[in-house]
Picture (cartoon, rainbow, N blue to C red):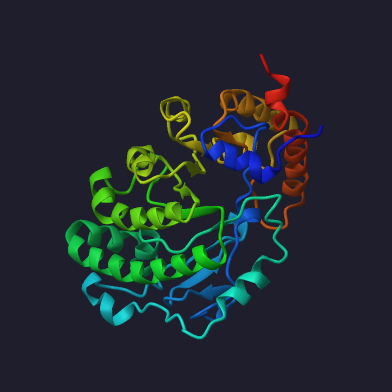
Length: 335
């Protein structure tokens, strides 16, 4: 089937609150653009790496190769010590950013697909520095020190954002900060509003002023934070997991917040050893539930260990189902 809009045009139309021509397929890994310029690249260690701030990360095969902070190797013991431990990378003044952006974007089809960039998180960095136990205690017991640390990180994040917006000109600015579990947020909306939102708001304002759309990444049951996201100009949220009242959110924020996700990535349909029939039936129910009225982007997949051939095979089924059934859903269900 031929469509009038490109993937980019269709997706940005949805983010503008309009009805897309076809059900968009949100491609988190394929649309992200990273600058090749590194200021403080740490060494690789046993397949993992050390972050710009000195945190060691180890890949986890069962999580598809995603790298997580190595347990027991946190670098910040007491929040008051952060000025002696945490050091922002220095951005040199002699970088030819115009040339770097040209090189980094030359193979990215800007006309066909949307491009997003991001620079910096706060909650996740604190947890990587201290671990969840000490990091959360710091937020509750020493909010002034946490704010001071976040302000310091923010100087670097904003400096990079200004460069990226000016030279790379992304379509979307992507704010990431996972601060919730499957059951509830790690912190209250009030604490989020006090300690995180001021920094995220400035990130969003810079992007909006540059003509970008703003997306928020937050896993888990984090719907309590949505009013503040809307207030600071966020128009899309991923992965919009099923632990939230997704249909209620979709109805309440129609035209203002697109849901990129809604797939039960931890349910039986996403398991590598579940039947193909269960997968296909679940995919149909998934699209039929969330596609009506727009404001929804497909993100279904099957998760498993790296190199699992059955996972690869099942994801080919998912891809085919999207093309055959999900993508043309609005044409086939037009009233």
